[in-house]
Amino acid sequence: MSIKVKNLTKSFDGKNVIDNISFEVHDGETLAIVGFSGSGKSTVLKLICGLIEKDGGEIITSEGDIAMVFQYSALFDSLNVADNISFALRERKDLRNKYKEEELRSIVSQKLELVGLKGIESKFPSELSGGMQKRVSFARAIVTEPKTILYDEPTAGLDPISSTLIEDYIVRLQQETNAASIVVTHQMSTITRTANKLIMLYKGKIVFAGTPEEMLRQDNPYTKQFVTASLEGPMHMLS
Amino acid sequence: MITFKQYLRQSTTYKIFKIFIREFVDFLTTFGDIVENGLKTLRYILTFQVNVKELMDQCVRFGISSLPITLSIVGMTSIIVTSQVASEMVKQGGGHFVGLLMSILIIREVGAIMSGFAIVSMIGSSLASEIATMRVTEQIDAISVLDVDPIRYLFVPRILSGIIMMPVIVIIASAFGILTGALTTKLTTELGYRAYFDSVWLGIYMKDLGVCLLKSICFGGTIALISCACGYQASGGAKGVGLATTKAVVWSFVAIVIWDMIFAIAFFF
Image 1 (tube, chains in turn yellow, cyan):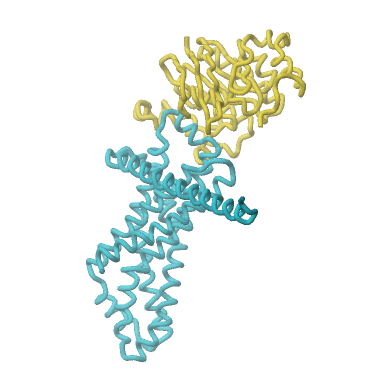
Image 2 (cartoon, helix red, strand yellow):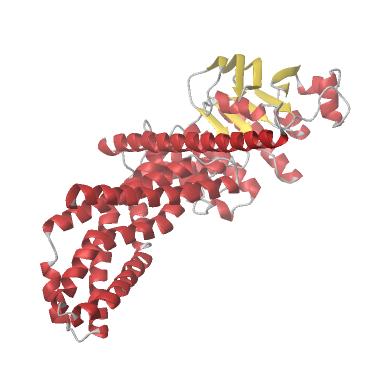
């Protein structure tokens, strides 16, 4: 077991954003979290990695680091690619003096190679395309060899070909690291190509849990509405 | 039976009251954040947990890049004061005290406060908008997820650079102010440089220099702390960055005037 979420709740200004949800993700598995915008998907990720505090419930993760890939990459724009990737190794209290400069350079180039970007160490984020920024943020996330990787809409705003490339790297990182991964996404291709299982959130509750294949069968009225992108169904746009 | 006018009056009062409460809560929250982040920063500084490379970069930003505008403001203030005072003092027979007056005025007040205002508008606003942008683009969240304390990485080098560089800026700006005073005196009166500088030395007291340095350390640290804390609080998008920057500039201006008043009362009352 790598991530176990039990009866998790979170509210903002008295409104339940996450309402008593539970799920598990094992090592080497990828869980997709889908749902409308504002249904609480990104909040789940922020709760797991500790950016916001939960109101109730339990989040149990295996020992080891938790990494997160942000929706818009969140690369540090004042640092070049190499410094972005090696940031945790240079600044984290327990890792600060562990590596020599040559070792850091070697780790950076190894991680860049893993995401298919060689020789861009000295470039700044503003000089990279959206897809390249996303891949650099993957490299930054896995630099500490995390046991859990969280992806917040990894293919948002990318063209279909770049999206496919990113999906391939999600699968590759899962195989390389054997980490438990959670992908928040709206995109059907990302769900079918990267996830082993999925949950659908609506108004902070899980309304469907199963595999991508089960979702595509459209037995559930919620998944049917989501897959067919229909305005008719049990879900209404959240105000 | 309540009339429509009474209802409207009540309703407006209620709205004003609500705005007042909201502003008051915002004031307390900002003040609390500044104190909390300031204490965390102090802990890191006292335990020597400082990123030296980042500190050097921030010192260059704080000191070197702000120097031209600071020198311009202090120099022009000196020209404004000297051009109005020097000729009058010469007429009244006090020409030999122009240098003394300018050195006291610049070392005690003009050098530090005008440099402070220049630093707030140039460096304070830039620090606040930089950190606010990092906040709204999730870069600060990324720092936290990578298990690095944003206070250590962002606040410590910036505040320390303010504490180190502000006295340097104030000394250079004050010297420049006294020099422009000499030039203005020479151009607007018949008084020579010799007479001006002879009296400048009479107006330089060790106590004034000490207070000036202490004051500039407080100004530098406070401007950097308030700017970082206001940027760190930002939320939303571009509007949030704008609001944070405005708040940082306003709070910094008020804070340096308060510091100035405290020093005036403590040392010259």
